[in-house]
Image (cartoon, rainbow, N blue to C red; front, side):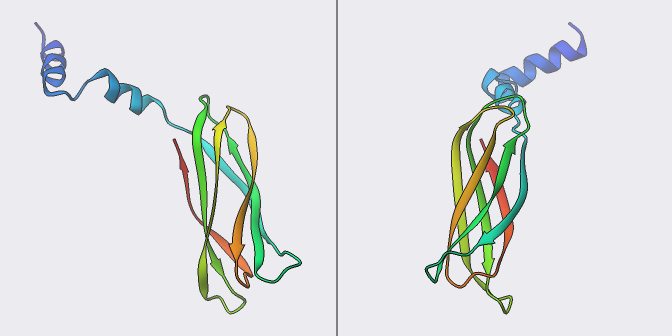
Length: 115
């Protein structure tokens, strides 16, 4: 038995090379957030952060979530806004509408989660 085979058997015995571990590492999701902006509603305090998120990978994204930090006209942080989509196919683009309560002037993308 050579060194590589011995190492593989040792990894399998320790649970480091289980089929589930390999499967989870091979499923990386590629998503891209396009331009976004704050859309002000006619009713005060009811705004939205709108934009697009695209699945640029080769596998379906079961859940994708965008999160934003919200700021007022003076640049003070006044809250967060999130939106999520399910079952985003490869090549598909989703238009998000994250509810942004308060007197929101701008938003900054905090994170994108995809699984």
